[in-house]
Image (spheres, helix red, strand yellow):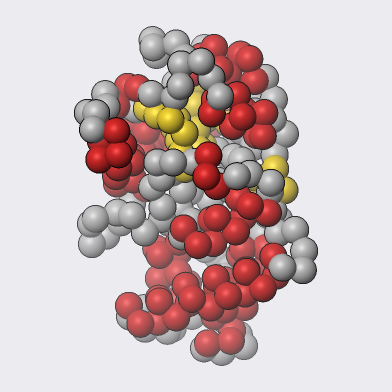
Length: 239
């Protein structure tokens, strides 16, 4: 079994610090009017978000400019993390990560996120999680396709699992835990199970309508969540 956690607004919150660092990266590199207004961040992939930001600010979204934004964003977030906590865990997140990583059935846990690896790890560490617990990951730039979308990420994680474990994993043995309709969609598109948590911008009703197999208000009911995760049947009721 493979359990994949989203990062932002699922495991932790950063109060838009990452967004601010992205904006400031653009202002340092291009112009002081560089704006992030109108950009949807929830459920997005960082390379796609950066491309949209550049286009919105009339900057040519070349690979070089995207790479410069990525590097400067990393530098700013890393610098900030050295002087303050840039992310805090959401209720129940630590308990659920610890319970899944130490469960008797020995599931593998990982991250499926729109974050770049280097900035995602900064957030995870700042919120008090041990990155070493997450052994199979799919990051925001992991898509092998020219036009990346989040639904490309579950197959990447499953292939990573196969390479590490030498096991062909049934997608129904993969649980994707996230807070947006994009997390739900990427699970369904790949035949995985979706556990949606209404701690982000998408409401419980919106997540249900998107087709999540289970919708919960937050991650605090550890035992009930674990019971559902370890159940092989797809359940449609809510906790």
